[in-house]
Structure formats: structure tokens, C-alpha cells
Image (cartoon, rainbow, N blue to C red; front, top):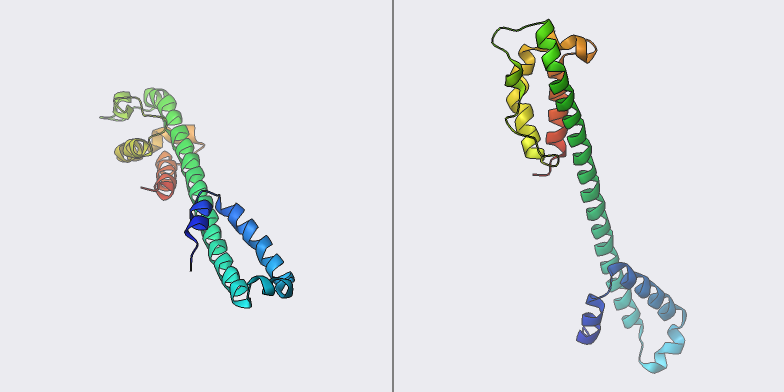
Length: 170
């Protein structure tokens, strides 16, 4: 049987505070079980308190775990987005020089432009840019390799894109 007044009061309190208060109350109920019996507190009341405390404790644990998971996912997405944007900036700085030194038929600096500024916090737009330029970067790998420490720029693009896809919650 629920006491609606206490439920209403408890619903306004943080779950962590309810767990703390419930733990304290359960300890008191167990410690003073004999003394509480003449006042109407029974072993069944203590058992019910213990079960309810276990319930809200498990809800609290699930809530904390959910928040931690969401925080970690957000942090992973921000990190992946920062690495992808760093790759894009590096690519945009290198392409004009690389194409002057190693021209590629049919490839111009304008081909690497997004046509607009890529928003700093837009994972979908960063992914769109990376996806749209993947084939172009692959064609320019040989010209770009000296500027990427001998590595394939297309491999770095793929790594940045895959990390962003893995971290994107949508």
C-alpha cells in the first residue's frame, strides 16, 4: 500500500537522496526492530522497505549507467568530429600545393571545396563532405602521399570517416 503523500514528496527529490535516506531508514528499522514493534512497525514493513530500496537502487544504477554511456558517446563523437575536421583542414591546406607540384588530369583545387563552410558541430555535414571527397582523394593519393608522411590520404580519410560513423548516435 502506497502513501500518496510520500510518493508525491519523494518524486520531487533526487533519486540519490532517496536511496541515501532509504538506506539510513532500513538500518534504523533493522537495528531497532524490537523497539519499533510496539509502535506498529513489523518485520513485513522492514522487508517491504528493503525491497523498495533495492528497486530504487537498481533504478539509480541504471540511471547513472545510462548517463555515463551517453556522456561517453558524446565525448567519442566530439573527438571523432575534431579528428575529421583536422583531416579536412589539412587536406584543404595541402591540396593547392600538391596539385601544383603533381598535377592530376581532370582534378582541380575547386574539386576539394565543400561549396560552403562546414559547420563546426555538424557531424552529418562533415560525413557528407568526407563521403563526397573519398573517390577524389583516392585519385590524388600519389600526389598527396608526400604531405601525409608517405601514407595514403584516402586511408586517413577512411579512418576519420569510420570513427565518426561509429561515434555518431543518429
